[in-house]
Amino acid sequence: MIGTCTALHLQQRGYDVVLVDRREPGQETSLGNAGLIQREAVEPYPFPRQWGKLLQAALGLGVDVHYHLSALPSLVRPLWRYFVDSGPARYPRQVQAYARLIEHCLDEHRPLIEQAGAAEAVRPVGYLDVYRTGRVWEAAARDAERLALAFGLRCTVLDAAGLAQAEPALRHPLAGAVHWQDPWSVRDPAELVSAYARLFVQRGGRLVRGDATALTPHGRGWRLPLPDGAIEAPVAVVALGPWSDTLLQRLGYRLPLFVKRGYHQHYTGGGVLQRPALDAERGFVLVPMRRGLRLTTGAEFAHRDAPATPVQVRRAEAAARELMDLGRALDEPPWLGARPCTPDMLPIMGAAPRHPGLWFNFGHSHQGFTLGPVAGRLLAEMIAGEPPFVDPAPYRPERWG
Image 1: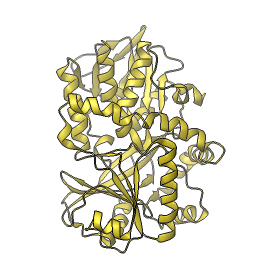
Image 2: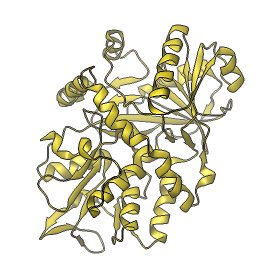
Image 3: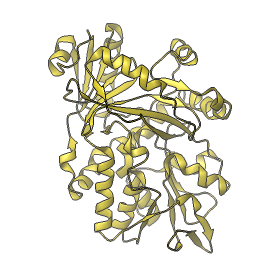
Image 4: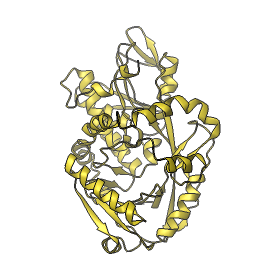
């Protein structure tokens, strides 16, 4: 999503753009998410600071967090910085910088959806944060009303009866929910990226299959070897999501990137949800999609390319079956992907500090799908020397030294 939208916005500014992907656009990280364009997501996911939650994660007892012990040595430094930036002294500043991007997501997706002819795939139904216990729901309702007032969001607090009326398929005795009304739900997130990519090609862009991590400096520009011949260009944009550091480490950059892996599984033949629902106390999402009901998991801290360990899928499925009839799982292995994360929860967007003509656009964590058009426009404006519609200072690569 990030790379495709960057290509579209550069193309709109008159650049001759080649979009290089090892697969078709939308078939990696953008394929596996919950398909939400999250206007309400003004607060990035902080590192948990409640001791009970930390202990539960450390003991491997929860649904929302899982980790590989072998990955922890390499994660100690970025996770410590993540913990620090999630603290009360810094987190409010991170929220303000993050919210400045999120507030534009619907306005930037809307014209691309219309131009790509993809309106049928998008449902402006919002989504539900669902709560099992009364005290947690009451606190969440107060917090939702605070966010709505501070950031111009729309939400409705539903008690148990209101939730039962809104979503009859949810059968567990639930305390209530918060219905965020602004987000859009996409029936097939990979197909939306594909629609944007088709728009790019229709407008004269070139889509090339290749390994973008092979990019190298060449003269005053950049060169990328491909099976059918090399591409040379004065400007290159790295929008490789969780694979960005594969290229950047070779160029001498040591950015504190890490991944949160996630899984999904599809189900069919069960109950029907009218809108996506997050089980806020267990940390999984249920989303009605083209292929069936998609269950998406929380975060797995592991090496990006480590073998799949779908522990969270099994735990999330058991918890989800308490809420509703899932039906049967489709005969396919759980999907596994990786979210590209930074310790300060802000993306990395801007000019490479030591390489003229190289630009970064990655690290959007849980919201790459939401922020694709926003990030694409902002980076294209910086490259073109236009006044940026959002102050890019908080996202510049130089903040990591």
